[in-house]
Image 1 (cartoon, rainbow, N blue to C red):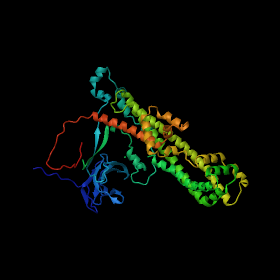
Image 2 (cartoon, helix red, strand yellow):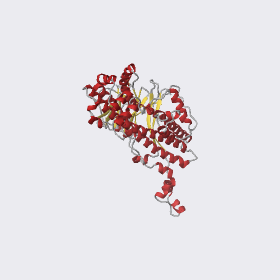
Image 3 (cartoon, rainbow, N blue to C red):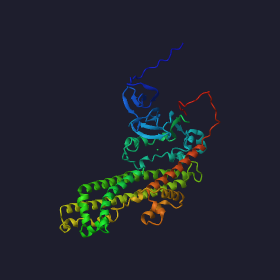
Image 4 (cartoon, rainbow, N blue to C red):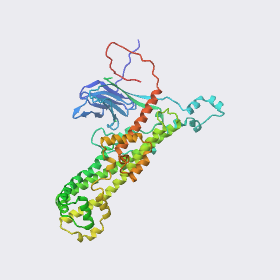
Length: 510
């Protein structure tokens, strides 16, 4: 009789609280063990018993119930299913949430099964097939094809395998919004999402399976634009009411008059010295300067590089689609990608104008804010404008007057970030969908020679509307790719398996 197999104990660990035996997941590649604790937290240990990190999830102060665990085969990510209907992917190296998948909008949805797998296309290029054919092909071709000549026989597939990561603009880390789900707010999260290209994985798609018991940015820049007008509008609103009661003046003409003539209206003097004063000016300066600096950073360091990166990737898809045209085996046509590139170009033009206008706003506020602070100090000490000839000679009068005429009461950035009302947004979205003319020249006209009677041109620079239109176009391309893949899959006849009782999913395999 054969001796029974003896299993050797590799490691042993005593926990402070009981573990759930159904919530154990081991990663052989990383040699990490994830344990679901009794307190609905995930504890990750090395084989020597050292704890690597722990993870838990709370919503409105209440801890969520831990439901399932599954390691990605390479051990870089662990998928954790929670009772709020979400699956969060945690990076093993950073202990950060790198992605969140909403399984269901219903809070009581239970995830009963969770698994990772890899789908391999298992295809060979024609050059590889000819190379395997050996002497048969060599005799037929009179010497055969060698090296790069053989690879040219499957040019589209080899072009698709080119690593263009080094030529793409580097994505910067976005400022955190204060929540735990900001997956682009840390370098570790970005590195976990965008792995270096590996040609060996070119035909492999990483897939996560999940089973249910019942059968994932324009707004942040808009906040900073609003901040540049919110506090100043409150300051200016008070003096406007006072000037309206005592005459036909408003604050913009009054300040313009003060810059040009040096004469200060009594109401304006009282407002500058008693109401605004040094403290109010500091608040005003901090609000405007901080908001404009943040908007400048978001546009220059994040929005424009992301648009350039997207354009490079889309141009690659356009080349693949053009190669197969007029057929569409990939699920999208060159015209669809060209429309996406056109929308990206319009967005890029608008973002570049935002950058230019923001720089002008920073310079304008620096000139106007400096002059305003000088006027507050001069009037508070009882000085007269005629006694300040040396300082007056260095004042950038043209920039100050330009700022008073424009940005003081209405921001030139508003056309890019002001939320469209429901009716206008719906009408503009329909116009974007139905237009047959390229958006890039239309955007150039709307920015350089705007027609105020043309509602389409008035709404075109709105970044939120353009982004929504881009998302609609991208969804159409994604749907086409999915449909093309479905057509390549053939299912056999379904076989019903009945066991006479309720069946729940316990495990997933492909």
